[in-house]
Structures are given as C-alpha cells and as structure tokens.
Image 1 (cartoon, rainbow, N blue to C red):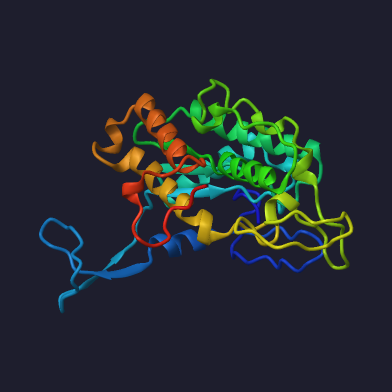
Image 2: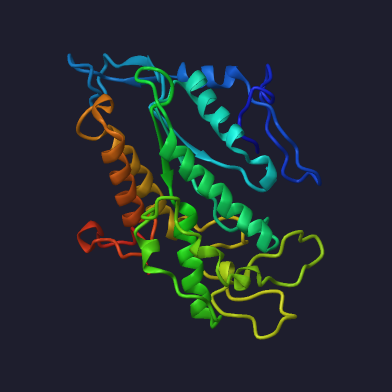
Length: 311
C-alpha cells in the first residue's frame, strides 16, 4: 500500500486492511527481506552447481540468496498522485538493493483505474509515467554497486490502447491512436502524451450507488454501452470486472511475457556486466512493442489453446 522508505520501515511489518474507510499506511521491516533471501529450498545440483530437474535422495537445501530483479508496481490509489515523487521512487529502488541485493528493477507504468476521477488526475498519471521513463533513461549505475538497470514495462500504454479500441467498439467518438504508440518510446521525452487528447470518454462512469465509492469507467468494464445514463450495469467485457483489477485471463499472458522479455534484455546471452545502455534500451523497446501493445503476436508463438491475447 506504499513505496518502501526509511520513514515507513519498522521492526515488524504488517498488512493493510482494505475495508478501512481511511487509507492505512503500513510498515515494512528488514526482517521480511531477510526471511525472503534466507528462505531454504530443496534441489539436487550437479558438479557444475546447476539445478537438476529430477530430485534424488541426495537433494540438499539451499538459501534463495540475493535476488536478481524486482518488479515495482506503484500503489496509486493507496498513494495519492502528489505523494508519488521522483525522490520516493529513487529511494525505493535503493532500498530494494540494500535489502534484496537486486541488480535490476522493472517499473510498471500506471494505467487508468477507479481512482482517476477527473482530467487533472489523468494528466497526473501521465506525468508519473513520464517520470518513470526518465528515471530509467537517466539512471547512472556504478559497476558492482547498487542497482545496475532500471527497465520500464509499458503496461499503462498497453491498457490505454485496449481501452481506446473498446471505446471505439462501444460507439464512442474517440481520437485515433497514433501509429507511433505501437513503437514505444520513440520520442526522446516519452510517449508524446497521446493518451491526453480527447479523453472525456474514459471518465464516462456509471451513476454512483450506495456503498460504491468509485464507479468504474464504462469503456473499461463494458462489452456493450448502457442504453441510458441511469443504468447502473452492463454486459461485462474481459478487460476489467470492476474498473480497478485487470482480467488476468486475457491480459496476463502479455504481462508475463513482457516481464520475461525485459529480464532477457539483461540476463540472456552475455553477462550483465557486458551490457551497454544502448543495447538494453533497444531490447526494452522491442519487448514493449511486441508485448505491451495491441500488435498481434507472431502466430508461431501461439499454441492450440488460449495463450497470448491480442485484438
């Protein structure tokens, strides 16, 4: 419910209670990270210290040890837009290294959700995403010290493209998606802000009902547009059920594939110490173009069952 920081670190971590009327900031503890890296798992390893798939009677226990990477999702909603600052993000990155010894941090850009109540908030989300991209682009790593790579997963750009297409399907008058959005981060200062133009349709919501604080965006949850402004429901789509959570059955495969792809930018092939900023950024861009967009996935990657979702 918050970005980790020195200020919210405590001796004992505890969980938040989402049913509370007011937002509850929670503490995290170093004990939690120590338990994670010292967790024991069982494996059988050969003379080259490679894990074998078959378990034998000589299987031994090993600690997880330092983690290679973390995926950081900014908890917007629990955190208000003005609280999500560059300083807080950079502090969380440094603490991820200090506590988990990660070399790579992947930050997910923010999508639309129920907490975006007006156009100014939507612009705030855009500015946070631009800040994330800039942190990744300007990160100055020191070999052997601290986090080496910050990568961006363009989940916000991906979901925006889906919402645009669904709104078009519902009959909204919407601006065209620029072709450049399917080639992520081509512009030197981000994605050009295409999602800020003519977006009143995103804020078209159901009337507020009792015990419902945040009615969902109709283009986000509906497969068919309500026939009148008084309607409080609609046939649901397979994008989001409630305007906050995304349908894992349809978006999940692309999400997971993009994370695997981004990790490969750093860890596949040559070692992490031989990577250059230029080739990592090129690889990052290709991963986002391939998976964090509505461009169809290559057919040869898709098996006979439902796998990677695309329009």
